[in-house]
Image (cartoon, rainbow, N blue to C red; front, side, top):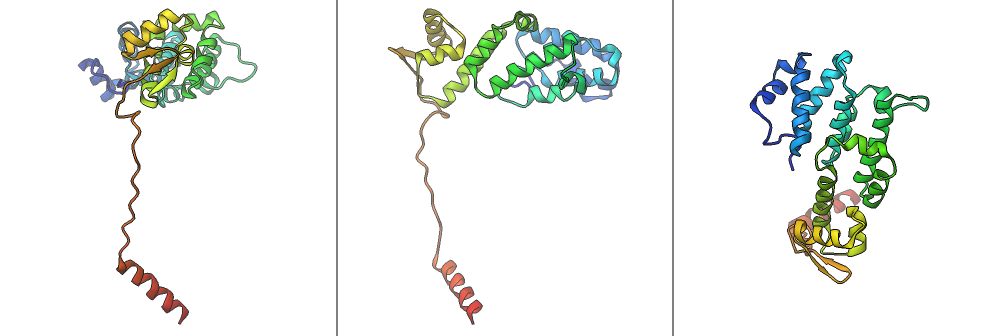
Length: 237
């Protein structure tokens, strides 16, 4: 997963974000169309999306709320990473950190997406799914992102595979947001390629989850001791 420099990025977008065109207000339409492509084709270009947010920052009259929320949702799928916060910091303070009296639809949407992202970053996966199902607004905010829930599940599974050799089935089921044993088993075996043995999910050994013996070597020679003894002798003389 490379959300900063994806291979799907076309040459004309690369020319926009790497040249002076990135400051041309007319480039906003091009970057918005590219954002729509990302949403439909399940890839993410955070660099290009930040260029669009920067244009919105410089040209407030061109701001499109839907584009902003789509950028934040796409950035969220890159967890754990700083991508969501990097996008958030390009919004105006009233949007990214609304006060208690803020009531616009965009500020409410940003606030809810911040909460979701914090749960993913904090590995509170079961809580994330519960929050996602708690308000219809979340469904509205993620509806443009094709395969959003599947992308989140796959990312969670990748992180689990990097950290565990085995995990309890009910725990993983809650983390994947699949409250159905059959669907969970199908995801585990077909998507992840793992094995279910009773109440345990067995995860194959890999470079990240393999236990390694730590070897600590201290290279101390006689000359080092001699210098220490000599220095202490000189200090006491």
